[in-house]
Image (cartoon, rainbow, N blue to C red):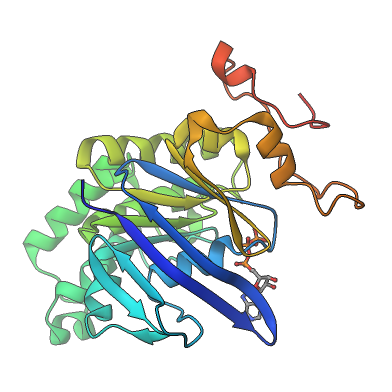
Length: 282
Ligand SMILES: Nc1ncnc2c1ncn2[C@@H]1O[C@H](COP(=O)(O)OP(=O)(O)OP(=O)(O)O)[C@@H](O)[C@H]1O
């Protein structure tokens, strides 16, 4: 199978702090992959490198490929980085929608990279694009809100609009950076179910950073866990052990455990309910 993500020897230093330390990984699975790890472990930094928004330290041998295309190498953008960015849907914790514009216009913004410049400047989208945007809103269950200002929506509804924008963009992969961190549990479940459904039906791979281990185990088939800028675990979600999860969120042996995310069963199943992190509320 073609590789979805290939990262070779990726390091990133911010002001003498090494956020990523020679990370190498491969994801061949076209399902949903969770990036896990304690706060500050480098999840968002890795995701930004994958999407070509941030470039690595200048080092020979560093390469980042997404869906087979080179995004960056040796700390420099690949010539086709714009195309790579246009093909990646990006979903953020804070939604990144334009509050004063309508839901429909926000979704149409997903078509900007494939639209003539004069049309984008005048906001003059084609009838076909409007129909596509409405279809994307139907897909996420938000068609009834098309004419409403985004500022009037709940967080969960805004995240569904952001997903519709990725569909409008015809993204070949979705990167989601803590998409449920600001949501209540019900909205979080709706958003994760939607990502799962899109992954299964449209076949779009999803890479998602999560603080909630329970959601990662329920919705993601693959895990990449980072700890202090290094890959701590890479593999099937079903194969990670309770001990590994505990160690992931535990500082150096002499220290207290880091504040770990809640890991409570969403809908307890025998397999799922058996996973918990020590010391977490049930
Ligand atoms: N633009 C930046 N300038 C300076 N330091 C940064 C910058 N971005 C990230 N860092 C640092 O890099 C490290 C990794 O940050 P990153 O945001 O990738 O971690 P994370 O695992 O996503 O954390 P969280 O779960 O809290 O969002 C942290 O120490 C952070 O302070």
